[in-house]
Length: 176
Length: 356
Image (cartoon, rainbow over all chains, first blue to last red; front, side, top):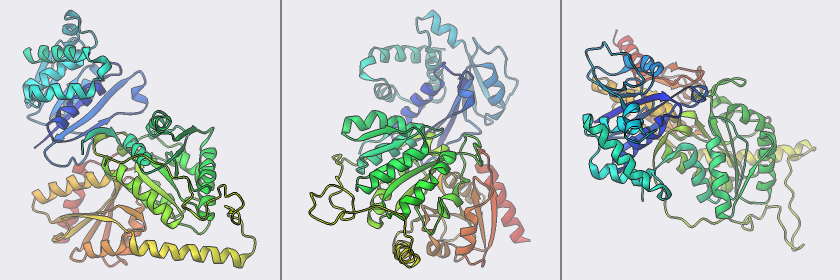
């Protein structure tokens, strides 16, 4: 079993961090994982994306071209990746920033106004994590225990207060 | 051992320090700058040296000087920067000094691009500089191997007094994967175990000189012949390769580095269609694992070489097989990473042609 995910949006939205969190869910669950960022000119003030693979066996290509799951946080990235999602796959879309509605009927789309939700809930800058919460709900990729362990790994002790904020953002996403 | 997620560049840097690399001389260039960044953070904490040189040429000459003293040292760059280092590499080889050089390849020639590539195979295995010499060349294929091969590179470089190169690419450098390190106490040698090292000796012995200049042809020839005898020992003892599902394979894919893992995904997809395909992955590119390749291809009719270049390793594949097999090529270049589906399409094409 292998789950391939692409996360995409603007630089500064925490796309790479959200991808890292997802990779840590796999690591804490004793799975094989890979995380590959886009690097290069598109990062500087433009779009950012990363590929995350979580698998029972060794990961072959870390570069995801046909994702099972797409998390997308801006229009240009939506246009770039929406048609690549595998039939039967899912797309989780920040509907505060992306107005387009998907016309594909072979994938499941979830529209989450995560940027707006984050602002209303005092979680500014954590729209990415709300979308991760939605991903957990739809795929069951991480248990509560795994989520907590992963957060403890990626958030340095000096910023431990952020663990609760991330948990809050995840549960918001799971309730949508 | 605890597994943690690290970028290939960072895992390689950490492994180098654990292997006793005391001095790192760097210069930034995408996609390998994380090596320098990691070294700059870590080296001061463990009592090593991080030095950002003013250019790639300076960095390799600092390595030349440091290696002369018997201290383990390293430099890293990416394709255009490695070309700049080539003069220094030749001098280091000519002076028979051990060191480790990293090339995290990007597209070329010239400034090329910054996305992953394997177009420096010829440079790494045939001629990273002028003169009669070889480098030991390792081609890791995962983040764990980025760490493991650097340790081997330091050990063999010391043993045979020659530079070793890790030939990685932007994909391996930038990606994160789980990696585990054995518990070791970090300790740096002082070079005193190397009788050739140019280091302080209180006039208790004749002084050592590191030099690559031999104006008398017979003297220079002797040096080179002696060096090539060492190369023969290396060829006989230190080739490494991985075979994946090659036993019953009718078609063997040859691929190294990051492309090998993509090829592996294609092998699995072809096997699911009932096509008997296997993967042969050289881990050492010099010495090239000729015997191992011949053995892996014993029952195969066809060989497919897959690279992120226009086809460079394919020449070594053909040489090793003495042109007795049909060897075909599939590659993407310029920074494009091949998809498993593209490799699978080529596999299907070759096996159908064979069936006709």
